[in-house]
Image (tube, rainbow, N blue to C red):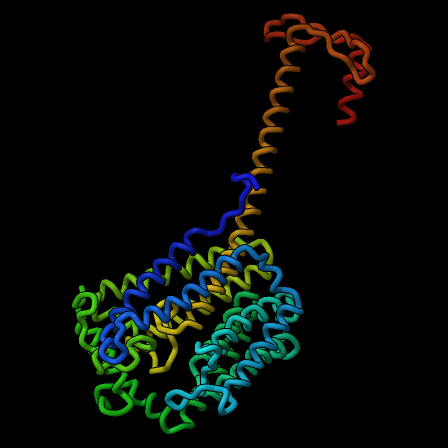
Length: 442
């Protein structure tokens, strides 16, 4: 393929993803290098994360060159949903699913652990984009159109809730609602679903004593610093210790057995302690720019499916980042949701990079269409200019008495005579008749 016709993807998405990955690896090293005393390798967590990054990079490159409309095929969507359902069921079976800290969320394959809920999130996005594209008109009916579409996200939510993992299950429902909004769901239906989901989530969170205590401690974590407020209070101490410019890379103290999960759920607190408020705002800005770039890809897409798919992928990544940073800073109640590109977890980073590959595939198709349209517009402009030049030459010939021919190929005898206003053509009777005939055709 010639170089000037080669399709190119949105480079801003690639640059932002690489920046976030590099900063994530640096922060992960700062949060885990002290584990050398236990494992003998200060880079153990970083090396494990690089495996996920390598797998994600391969998936990103491959999927960026696969036409994204392939995922619109019903067989592909059903296959992804079936794999997600099987994995989510397997993880609940004792002896197959790996239980850590009372939650059964992982599966082990060949010595590597994976989290099926990460795969299910983007399978849901692909399904919702295809379903909303096929049933565009039914979205205006709440019970006849919207309710059936929410069955798949609802079933995924219930399966993930059994692990239990309320944060990931809730993120699936929130992303599904955002895609419904992008598809044109009525405002009253959005408010009804939002209020209903909030009420159900509040009832579920209040039903268990430990979840209720966590919500109550969210209001004043330092009052229950020795109990449910311990995580958030240590996170706030880390952010406060960093000040404006931070204590320096690896100089923070909260990761030394004070801050729980500094490599995953609370890694943003390590950013604040090491790099200060300036570092935190820089990360927030990079995520905001990434969301902006992803939404720009969605808005530039020429078909409904690609637009919804790009919007769903972008909203999933952006919403997950917002919830994680909101939890770390005390804006939201404490929950376990990793920070995209930063938190340790090979499944999370590889699935996010694979989803970005689909986003790049959409942007690549957008670039091809825009290039074809600009090329067509340039060709049309050249033809218009050529036509204007031809008309100008014909006018010059008429003014200087050069013979013209009518449609029958006979000479019409147009000659020029000079008047006070300039050159004016004088026609014979037959020439006047032919001129009138041509004007009638026009």
